[in-house]
Image 1 (cartoon, rainbow, N blue to C red):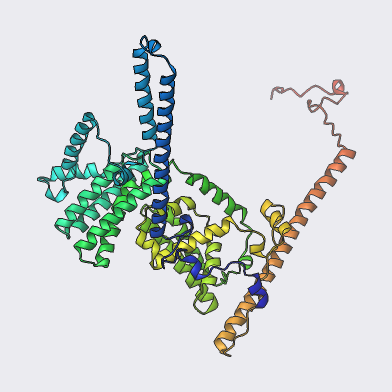
Image 2 (image 1 turned 180 degrees about the vertical axis):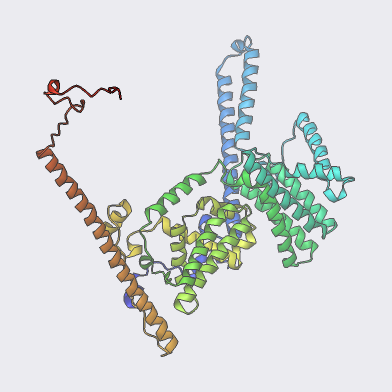
Length: 535
């Protein structure tokens, strides 16, 4: 056991999964070890600092340009200025436009500008456009249960199910059906809330429409918009339900499902990120690690047991199925189911509950065997757009944090982690060699002396022997097959050699009449002729 404990290179203490700021919530490698709440505070603090530095830079550039312009004006004489008064006026206007452009370039976003600096007054044309848009939105945002006729309800539902992008017909049809189903479920859920339900529905639809016009934002800015909406909605619901967190969580789950189903194609793996590049890198890395075995990772799982093998297959299926879900909560549910199957497999193998040191290596092994599609994109999508309360606490947050640690370990896996020499690790990674299949360790004798356990272990030893015998039989069959192939090839070569040395020369006589070879035909008597005798 001491040797096996020395080989264990995967160990994560429970304190390492928590936020490094010490708030008690789960951290995340994507948030540099912070939880969602602390990461947002750090991000806002860094952003405000950057905004202040940008404003200071803009003011300094403005002062330098004004000073340079004033010095250039003072160097010129008064008579020379008179003929060029219009030119200097034009130059002054260009200077003003240039300074305004610099200020606009370093100005914060519209959401932060409302806190730090008074917003600039919009042009009259934009105001008219905004009024028209608001008037159209009032008509669109009328809840379906308040419409006058079924036809209007159908039109509203069609508007609601309309997507901003236009993919292929089959995918669009499927996405539209799912969006329509989620919208109906959301409406049915909100009907029980009466007036608050109508307000929630109105705000959610308005937010979806506003997000459709923010395609140029970065993934962090899109995430900030969604998280701000979650926070504001949760605060309003807490004040309405008078602190009932359970009811707030139920409503927020439905809000998240509705919003992210509608926004999935716009915010999942956006073009402004390198998520797709990370997906390919992780996929290539996992393919290169196909040779890693259970023994190298010290995984306490025996796949020869049918129940354990079934749980391993279910865990692989669940982590692969994560990519087919559109809602972050549903993706987290796939991770949770996968983790529970892993715990069941470990429990059946060890006949005792699994520990954290057993769970993480097994999760790494499952990820290596599954090689889930778009793994990094799904992790980033959950990190950016999931309800933060799910990632900070509960079993979903715990399992998701372990998955992030497993992926980080795979990306940094080296020879020391697998107790291998650097030379062997490089040869295995390059494909020049592969590790030999290690025989399973002998099963320990039953400690309690139970006849049933003794029979189980005896059966396991018998199965191990049968497996070895089957390997020997298969090896003999392969050798016999090779010998038969070689014998047949040798016989064919010998026959061909004989034919080459003694070729057959068969000459057949030409076809002729039966009596063509008879030279005495002229001496034969004439043929008998019929004669008539008088009688």
